[in-house]
Length: 295
Image (cartoon, rainbow, N blue to C red; front, side, top):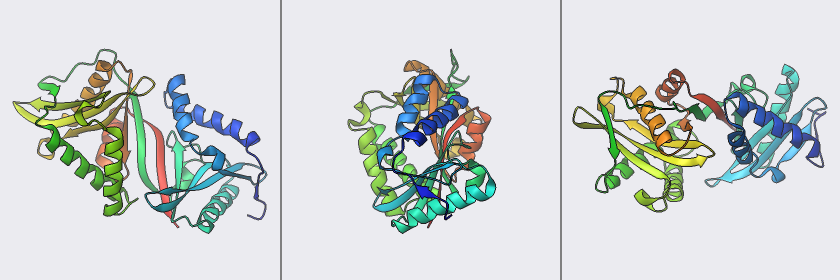
């Protein structure tokens, strides 16, 4: 690790980093406008990152505050030779720890690249994934399933259930305590739904089959260029195991096209193997995988 040195500027590294990230998103099937929008998000705070080299590859790190905790982030790590890559990762972890980070996180573009590849971070816990697939050009709702807008009377109960489920997902992923998760949930819901059910670009659905409401949906049209984000497509527990999970994905595609978008995107928390398996079976590519390790 003695051969690793911090660079005074980012110019040489940055051009290569941007192209690697773009290549990862293109390989996952993203359009050029979407790839560049995702790159812009990946570059958030880049001017405050520290960039180093071991002579053969790059390391980019930073520490920022997240829900009251100092979190280290390995933004890039390009060494491919196993010993050098391990040494670079160890250096990055130590660099973050020395600056007060309680944990270190890494984002793997396309689920496998962007920071040395997934193998280097096998010891890190998966915290979440962003998934994407193109919506069918003329999606049809599955036979026997109907979709209608969620009513004003249904909205408060739906909201309470969604918030409770979101808090539980965050805690299960292992990143935050229940108290921190509740604070994050309050902040996120206020940001995404400042006008509640009337927030522009958002649509809320009830899924019905056999005369019963078997689930709900919440989507955000135009979340990214050409992309509808599925905040929630939920099948109630008592109706699971009946094929409605796949049906809900079809509803998401239908909703994306209803909003004028050509792709559907989801986030899935780490520890939710059922949802990850469903996304695998229904063809949702991994755009980003987020992993972390306590320090």
